[in-house]
Amino acid sequence: MKLLDDETQNPLHICVLQSSYEGSLSDTKAYDNYRCTPAYAFNNSPDTKNYKFTSVLIKKATAYSQVRDLVRTGTFDAFFNLCDGALDEDRAGISVVQALEKFGVPFTGADSKHFEPTKLDMKMLAFFAGINVPAYAHVSLHDNIEAVCSHLNFPVIVKHTSGYNSVGMTRDSLCRNMEDLVAEASRFMGLFSDVLVEEYIEGVEVTVLACEDPDRGVSRAFTPVQFKFPDGELFKHFELKWVDFGKTRCAPLADPVLAEKCKAVGIAAFDHILGGVGYGRSDLRIDANGNVFMLEINPNCGIFYPDNDGSADLILANDPIKSIGFAKLMIKAAIQRNIAILARKPPVKVSFSSAEGRGYHVLASRNIAKDELVFHDEGRPLRLITKQYVDRNWSATDKAMFTQYAWPFSKKVWAIWPNDHNNWRPLSHSCNPSLWFGENSSLNVFARRNIAIGEPLTMDYATFCCGETMEFDCSCGDAACRGRIAASDYTTSSQVREFYGTRVSDYVYQQWISRSSESI
Image (tube, rainbow, N blue to C red; front, side, top):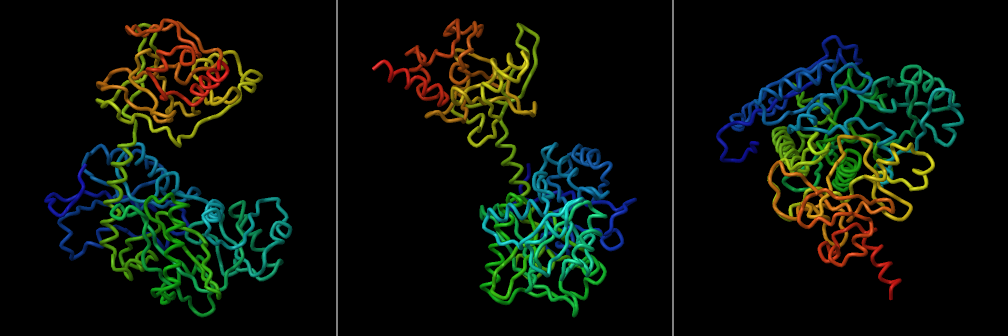
């Protein structure tokens, strides 16, 4: 995979993906139907020779097949994803990201996990990250609006819970009393089923762009921009955002202390809400006491407009990095992130064979060196269940699977296989395994020796699958085969203990410690 440096002669080929409005009923179709591309940032730049951009409009209905066909060409080094269709829109959005992830190619912007957090998600994640957010209420159909919002102080503002592009918002979305709130919230719920009501923060509105930065290794933010709304306007509703946007003025936030505070909030929101992936533009309010409140963060925000007049474009125009520097940084980040993702992918594949009753098993997908990390399981999500629950509620078939594949964390709590079968690891047992745990009962799994591509990956079941019922005749065929495998092998056999040391599950190790203490 190419990664551009100063000596590279051949340009990087970048495919720019943008949501198509063809046949769309989107509220923004009449105002936002521009061809956006980072290529604009390279106009009249010497860097033009290093990048070649190809723009493609993506339809929601054909997003997967379009991305698949583009990937199949083998033409592109990275995809600059500007698709921003929301979940309830008829424009391409998250389905594009899912396709890009499926095909394992570099792409800019949010990943599928962080593509469209709701405003409720944002507020919760912001709260636990120590970011100020306005007090709010979530109102659903059939809720008593007055009761649910009784704790809020007026004025309040009514918003879409997932919200994008100020859709549904009018001047009347700012409510100064309960009567107005009931009317506006009812209107919103008639359109979208539920609604977010939050206290309106009197003060300055600021927007700040943050992104991942592979050069620094930490996220960064750019010059915050302050909005000055036209007389009589207090917030960015749909008409002001799209119809009369030209009447809104902006300039870099003049106060350097407040600017740094806003950048810090923008970075924190990007890291904790968007996972530090891609880029995101946060809308903030600063009250009279200098307190900064996050209203929302926009992943895959509009950018690279023809006239350079999107909010993110205005930020970059006022920052030393400029649009061209940002475009280059995002392309580099996409490529390096993809390299890191591929490097973290276990070098394995699941295969099936009817020979000798092997069934499903795991093979090395490439040569693996001795001591190489094969499965990074520290921090990996696990499903936990108690043995008594299994005994009382599971079928005989599922209990048999539990006996074969579950492994204990304690005498009562067990880890079981993931719900998603794509993450199953049907590792075979061997008394002379190719894999083992890291030292000191690490959950990470390493190569015990050099492993050739296509070789079966095996572990010793007695090092972790050691419940009371785990016992079977071994057919591994190795010279070191113990014949009969039992849960107590590590506890009762000094030879097994000497072989594995502390490279066993903590439960197995503690069983031996407990037995040793009893024998003293």
